[in-house]
Amino acid sequence: MPTITLLPDGLAVSGWNANTGTVNDALTTNNGDTTYAEAGTNGETCTLTFAAPSVAESGISSITSVQFLSNGRFGARGSGGTRVEFLFVVGGTTGFGQNINYPNNFAHSTRNGIVRTVNTAGAAWSYSDLEDVNIKITKIDNSSPDVRITKINLLVTYEEVTGYGNLVSGIASANIGKINGIATANIGKVNGVD
Image (cartoon, rainbow, N blue to C red; front, side, top):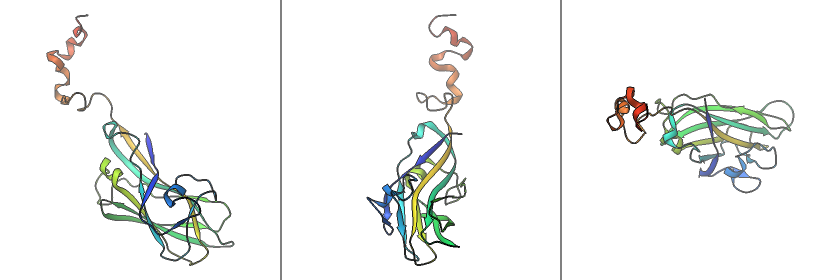
């Protein structure tokens, strides 16, 4: 199935700090400590907004799943790590809280969320959900040192529109065989050619 990656494009609620530029710009690509967002205080939170899908609504038959992808690290050395809570926010409804542990490490570790097949209200994902989805992140452990995240993206899996569907010139599927009064069996004679 095809996928779309939604990149952060703004902050609905500010709270974390970027080492350079904006928090949302710092979280588009996993580039280690080149750009990142960080939080040092237990309970520090921010909410990310995401860019609109790169595929038009007319090209998507249905949305199969949405999953957050992240890369981050906890700046301490030794055992343990720190946790960051990820929450989906869709149309004002918050849900799917998931705690991700970022280990003590020099390198950023990949930590991906659970694949979500329904939205926060328990219904199938819709295109308008993708246009309205936010991710709220909150540091929940160890006041210091800072936890650093270098990427948060949303991976959307969807089914493409195939065939004529109902989107071709407003013709209902039941009537597709009779475009301009020509039965499907006679489609070869559309231009007068057998």
